[in-house]
Image (cartoon, rainbow, N blue to C red; front, side, top):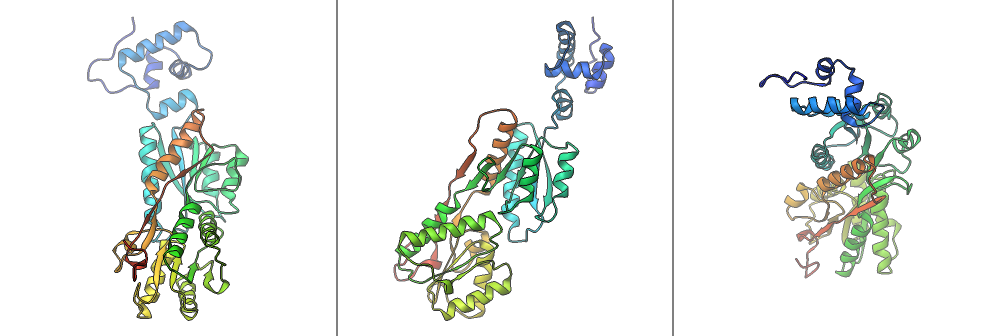
Length: 345
């Protein structure tokens, strides 16, 4: 009869089990996982001993048993600035929450369009079972590399390749609806300021703006559209031109741009919404607390992280899942677009 560990004895691992039973760690791992060539008698003997000991395999032991690391890689962009940190923080919280609940740990790294060496290191050293990309580019070397390596991965965003696993906020629909709402409520000359069109999210939001304008048979006026405004200086110059063109509303592609627009309008001593109305395709705490508060689209970043993590882990587990999932959104109407019954709240 096998020796049973004394009560209060420290937790044992595969090494101790193998030593007690006089067999190899590989044999113990095969017995626990149910995989590999091993006699029924040996498997029964190992499992009975594990039961006696109250042994529960940790993620490392499970990994040895079934060739998994029980780690999921999370790639953040290395060029995020202070305005973007809340999005990635909340997304990461959602990922970690779901990963923990499914028996995984998150391994976080950063990468850029010019340098994906951290991703290569993670994959080539077999540190993770799959990867979550939290930002996608129109031409994305991270996606190309992971596809080439055959590594399970998902993008928290969109990608042009329909074979890539994706979960995204419904940016096109949301931006189309907010643009349409502004036009319906007497915004006659909407100016648009957008960011880097190398980012897939920027492409989606601009497509939503165009769709909203088309819905009302409004042509897009070149003198009122400013794209690739990646610096405070460029945003400020765009605002100056917009004011000269007598726009009655500025629609910002994201909260970072909107923050810079608000600062420029304040420098010009202009009143919102009396002199010009302002809305954003993305919300943040600053826009909520601004006086007046800014009309914006709201998305649930934490839920985006949760869903992305569950989808990739389900995929790794061999479950059937949808190739692309869209999440919902809210349009939050605030005083920045209210004047003379315009967008009444």
